[in-house]
Length: 233
Image (cartoon, rainbow, N blue to C red; front, side):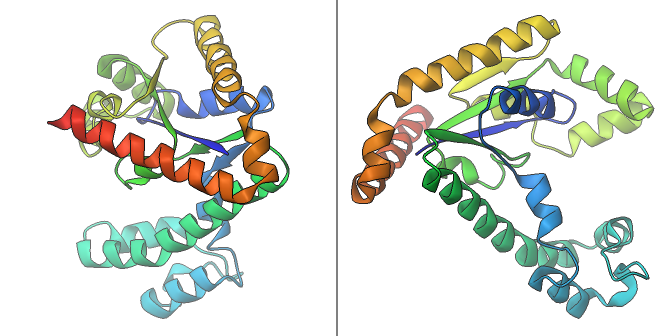
């Protein structure tokens, strides 16, 4: 199965692109949705969080109070790292399982919608990286309009993340969202067309003959690793 990693920066329009792909029937594995699922009441993830942080991070109904948890870890690097060690393995396991389910259903490809794909760094484990881009000034303006924040606060949020320019360096495909909605839709259509062309009929071999799929995936990841190393030298 051909797996595309989709990412972008805050207010670049990644969620919009993900929605357009979903509308075209492309299977989407959304990391944000999975991140909420792994901390639902009764999950191992939530139990581990409560064990470490205490019941103070829960609502009266036993669900996770994300805002409270955020305030607890905001200025404490050690607690933030501890939370990541609890959440990240669970999120990745569920993401892998979602990909496998799409493969078992005979899907040719799927898209991993991951905000921190590069920082993870999960980009090493996908066949193709697609980055939703817009210039940082447009990104800043959209963030101010979306959240009603000041330019100073919005700029601080952007500065705390890996810049969109740096993310583009990892991209196999750049989706430019600095123009019109129609232009964005045409780029998404082109991406789906290219995926169909790239995957072709070989997906049937990986589905009918699992060992072929495993070897094919290993070859793709190895080739990407060599290509990335060559570019960095």
